[in-house]
Image (cartoon, rainbow over all chains, first blue to last red; front, side, top):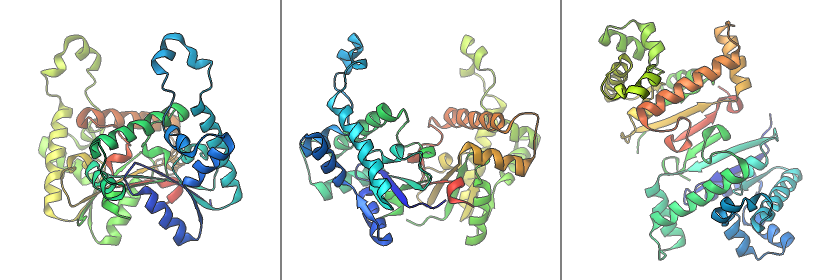
Length: 182
Length: 182
């Protein structure tokens, strides 16, 4: 099997994005990251920041939907984003060898034989330190920011893929960014 | 951080044991595998085969215990095996650099800084083919054998560690033995 397409899934602050870009550079491959957001924005008409915010959550109508069952019959903006994300990532993979960071590409491309699926995680302390250094302080504590991001990605992944985020079985290689390093 | 102790956790048939032995050989380290079973047998007085059978399950009294709550007050042979396993693996790690295959060593040594925890998994088809080649046919189908082993290890690991078996976060490196190869 030739692995010509590498997907990098990563925990927030785990250095997964940096690793993805370095791998792409070393292998001379295109690295798709925020370009996917831009493409979804172009094709949907949504603002790029709106896409970014909403591509890692599911519908907020959970409680209402659970009372009414309406979620079965409605197609949310987030569902539109998911459909476009699936289409765009599938098309990028068709174009040729590349590295794709995030956006559940591991699941979207799970049936392609020529992929190598990588997951990067790290301990909370390492990630907390990293997000403050890279993205600065905010009103929320680093731990609260990590917990919120983890929860959003976990719920979004499970909602759209039916899988549990961070299960080793879904990837060819999983690495602890904190102990292995960039 | 210096990683002088490598633990290899693995799915049945994933080539994890073979990888562990090769890593140890390349690095010139002692590799502990079935010796741990032998040591538990020596210290407990149980037969080695009994230890092997019972070191990957929890109490069979589940249903009875759930009715009576007796599990809270009894200490089973399996609990004895777990306690000895913990003691022996801790002592082996104290002796110096080594590779330890299986036996939940990732959890037992989780608080040591000088460890590298590795998890090897593989697809069902790869593992089914491998166990038939290595261990021969049996009355049960290869798939049934894999499912039984997976379930036993999963339940045993969760019972004694409180963790979910195969969660990437518990390891420094996870590899798909089927796509990465021995």
